[in-house]
Length: 107
View 1 (tube, rainbow, N blue to C red):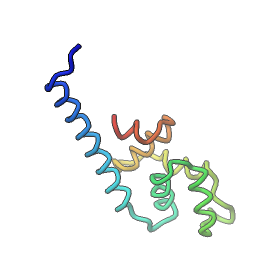
View 2 (view 1 turned 120 degrees about the horizontal axis):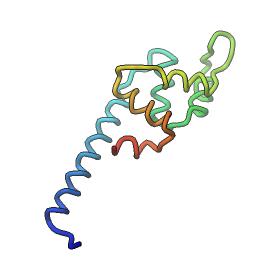
View 3 (view 1 turned 60 degrees about the horizontal axis):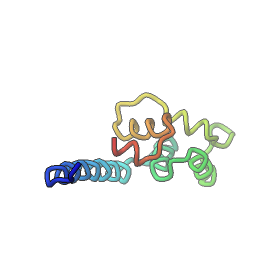
View 4 (view 1 turned 90 degrees about the horizontal axis):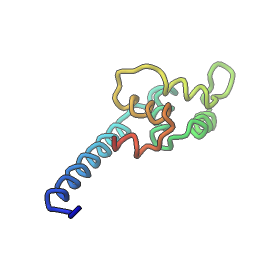
């Protein structure tokens, strides 16, 4: 099949939409509040995508759940909770389907 100007334009439009989605995600991540340990967990997960790293960071910052340290399961529970927040929905999809961030955002 010959690559045409029309095909190139379609590819450009697909890439523009992908860029828009990534930019929206970055804006959401940057503006996400950090008022509670749970919100910090969500924001940290958006940066690294690994629940173990998030739990370690919260523990290093001195956050506790009762008298115990955070675990990766605690972080997973926060991310997997139902929410109307579009930002959290993207993170949940990334977490539950074990896909890389780029695959989730580009869909």
